[in-house]
Length: 195
Ligand SMILES: Cc1cc2nc3c(=O)[nH]c(=O)nc-3n(C[C@H](O)[C@H](O)[C@H](O)COP(=O)(O)O)c2cc1C
Image 1 (cartoon, rainbow, N blue to C red):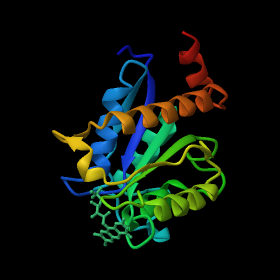
Image 2 (image 1 turned 30 degrees about the horizontal axis):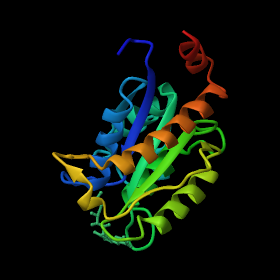
Image 3 (image 1 turned 90 degrees about the horizontal axis):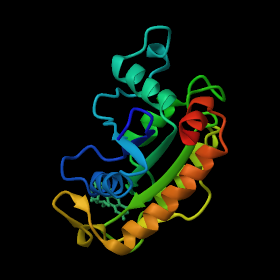
Image 4 (image 1 turned 135 degrees about the vertical axis):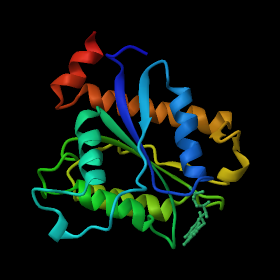
């Protein structure tokens, strides 16, 4: 992968070591590696949002997260569903990244959303909530398809998603993210796409 590779930031909404959502991200990372570099960014160190800490000197993990979003061409979010919504871990990170309101690093950023579940719903309710939150950030969410990975525990092996049908669906959605980046507002990403 050259230095000019299209850089995509991958964020899992789950912190646990054996997370299926993170495995989905790893599967995608592998599947698209010829076309883009997906860098997985952990939310482990992000503190709870507190506007008192959101001044000129922000928590280091927040500074790192915001810089990573700023410097990537697009973001892939893969989230489990917790009680019919997205986990607080992910909502909290999006809240940090969303400031200043309507002028944050997420504004205009192409974003692909995916949800997972060991159940049959694939996290569809979390998916809807995730998109609603992203609407508040003015990011450019790939509108369709909704990538839902149901029965995710049956589709992984060796720490990553291996199910061929799911990977095909996901890589087709990823292509739409690349297309959105190509239409985009980032001169840097447009430049490397035409190299
Ligand atoms: C607090 C909590 C709430 C959950 N609520 C839901 C839910 O509403 N819908 C669902 O499909 N799974 C739910 N689950 C099950 C998760 O989908 C399952 O634990 C999944 O493996 C978590 O994602 P991960 O593997 O990426 O960590 C819940 C799990 C936890 C811990």
